[in-house]
Image (cartoon, rainbow, N blue to C red; front, side, top):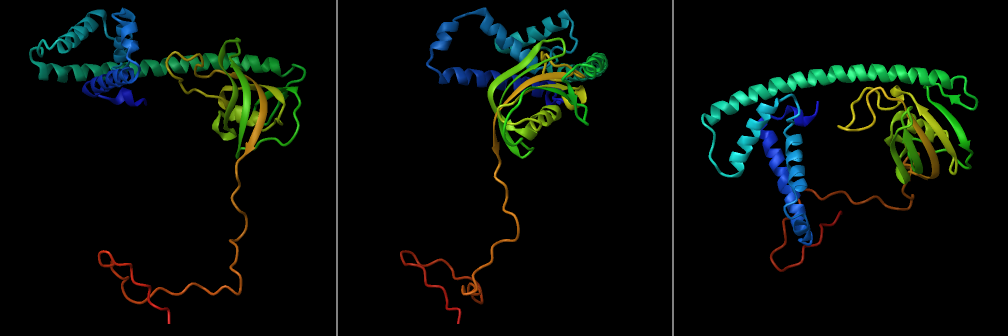
Length: 289
């Protein structure tokens, strides 16, 4: 569960104000021209209000009338117009309403995600069924499908390596959700299907990997507004530019000391000497004999 979802209204408001303060501080660190350029541009302040409303999660089912009342309260606080009547009692009631709306919103979102995931998995299954008969497509035991676009040379990376890759990611309907050149990351730091695909390659090689939902993001929701939805299959065109093996720990027992090297002297009996008097060097350690 998202941490923001668990926050109470007072905490959400505090987070929102902190976010605005942080944005203000960032602007003040600049040359000072940002404020002059923005002037009284309504879009700037609309963005501020949007950020605050998102932080407070006001998108959980409030009516237009309820939102107008919320904004009136914010306006009163922003202009020092005084607290509303019965403020403490009203805040407690608002907290109860907020928690109830949040619970209903989360339950509805869970149902929606499950329905979306089921639909996307059905579409993915049909897509992979067509790949079965496509020439040049290979399949691994895990269920990853891939085709080699260009052979590489050298050693394949392992999960302990870092890689440099160029890649482009799309959904089965062709929509691009990500692309990057010269990206560097650990082989184990990506979704399982991408990680497995990298280990099938050699430097200089290119493949097209078809990743089923269970080897991608599964049913996990992505950030709001993301193209990838629960249950989506992923397609990656990957070029392995180079790999950077991670240093391996030394193998075997630790090195032995030479036979002619005497062992270190044992610690002296009794408590260790105290600090030296001011301005005098420390006394030499007692003899081992």
